[in-house]
Image (cartoon, rainbow, N blue to C red):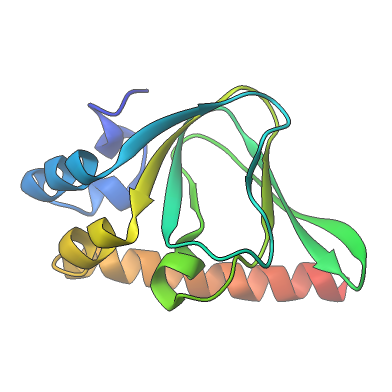
Length: 141
């Protein structure tokens, strides 16, 4: 999977028209990380989010001083959207579970491209709300 064909594996990119996908990719960067690398840490500020193009990540949250696994995400999935949408601190820590390739989408791309395409922006918002619900359920277990 490459940055050239993100609509084939990511619902977010599939929700954009071709011009939107090209513009989003032009504003974004590609990142590579080794296994064990911390991509973002709970409580830290951030204004971008990530789409996984290769590899998996483990998402953990602080449960009263104990780290609790919230999710494992793989190619085509995204994370960090809550921070990009709400300007709140990171809600979880995300670590590369294996060698990882990401598309890093900055806030400027969210504002310029995603907000101009209602289907993609609605998908991002829906995913953010779903993630909040799932996180609360996991922490309550």
